[in-house]
Structures are given as C-alpha cells and as structure tokens.
Length: 150
Image 1 (tube, rainbow, N blue to C red):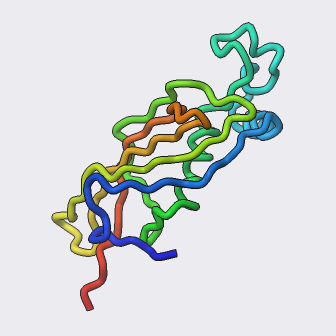
Image 2 (image 1 turned 60 degrees about the vertical axis):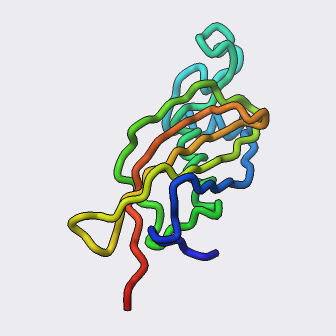
Image 3 (image 1 turned 120 degrees about the vertical axis):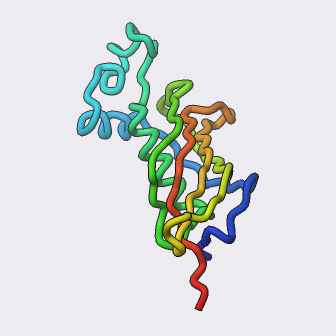
C-alpha cells in the first residue's frame, strides 16, 4: 500500500474503508474488559435502559473505527498519529449485526510553521452502519510527515 505524505492530501479528498460486522459476543468481550455496564453486557437488562437493547460501547466503536482507518487506503507515512479531536460524537448506538464502514474526508492541510518535516491534517471520520447512518462522527487533527526533499 502506498504511504501518503502531507503533499499527497488535499481538502475534499475522501477515503473509504472495508466493512466490519459487529457480533454480540464481540460487544460482550469488549464491555467485560473495558466498559462493563449492563447495556453492553446483558441484552435483557439493556431493554430497560436508554438504549432499549444491547449496544456496543462508544469506545468499542472508536476502536473499530481505528482498525478500519488503518486497513483503509488512508495509509500515512509515519503512521496515523493523532494530535487531538475537535469533535467526537456517537449519534446512534451500534447493535449486534450492524456492519460498520468508514468515510474519511480531508478538511484541511497545513504545513507546520516550526517543523519543516511535518504538517497537520484535519479530517472528518464518519463511521456508518449498513444503512449509511452515522454511529460515530469525529473531527480529528493528525500529524503527517512531509515528503523528504533529498
């Protein structure tokens, strides 16, 4: 896979990922280790919660989003290095059987003023379910290497 440098990216550019199907056992496994709340662990108990059914942790969705990013064509030289988020939202729950995919849109590309070997790239990452409904929306800032000049 070709590694992308800052110079290869431009505002409006889009990248899409493959798909990841969420199984109930995967939701339980992640929740037991990292977010052990009833609406992530017990389908029956989850019915009486705000989610009205079993839902994956938002942090599980974020981890899947990261995996989809790494496996997509958005392959950055030096790796995907986050410098923080301007926005992170989970507009709807992820359910067992949902099939997630990702659309990454480049919002801004700017060279660093103090470090000539890198720049900052702002991206919107929309994690969508099988109905193309957003389940996670983030706007993040990435540190991206510039193409070497030698």
